[in-house]
Length: 255
Image 1 (cartoon, one colour):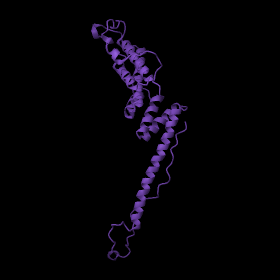
Image 2 (cartoon, helix red, strand yellow):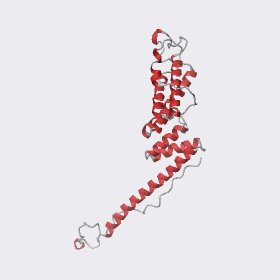
Image 3 (cartoon, one colour):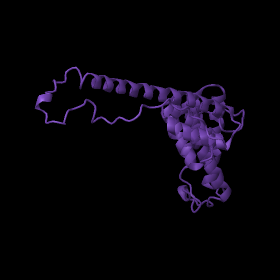
Image 4 (cartoon, one colour):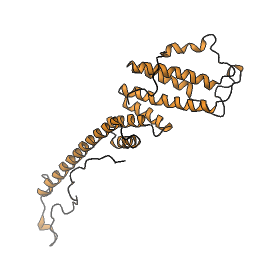
């Protein structure tokens, strides 16, 4: 789960180095090359650079490279090349293969930016980008796992349970998902016990007030002023029901 979402490659190009490539001599795309093809090539270069930084443990640098992918893969459509006609020339429309690759790179962008935020300790940002990735690929086990893990870190137990159980349903042998589900069970049990203790204290306080005839500061009841047969019994109006039973441990669904 910790690896960047792409195959290894030795190429290393920095964002700073890429920033000047558009002005290099001979960088103008060929007339028969679509703007989408050029964008894909540049995005793949940033992807390779991000992967190299990630594998070196430099997550901030990797984050910058993965972020740069966004500039090149968003804005294209299958009907018309988003950059067609710029510079006085016309270029071919975006092909189906190019659209497919652009969609893959969009997923790479969201998924790997989320991964870098996870490594940098930003659970909230990781959740945001994993959610964007899952909008493109709802069955992405890696993003379900990462979002579930971060939701668990943020105390969002129900959201974490939903993500992790879905990930487990898609990949029942995934050890990291199983470990997070174990942590979820432990936190759920602790949360239930905490809630039970809280209610126990409330019930104990209410019982003590009943035993004292309405509490320490309650005024004395003048029974002489009450009509016959209307004697007040402390607690008659309090219907608190039965005490809570012991908390039930959460067990994951078996799929």
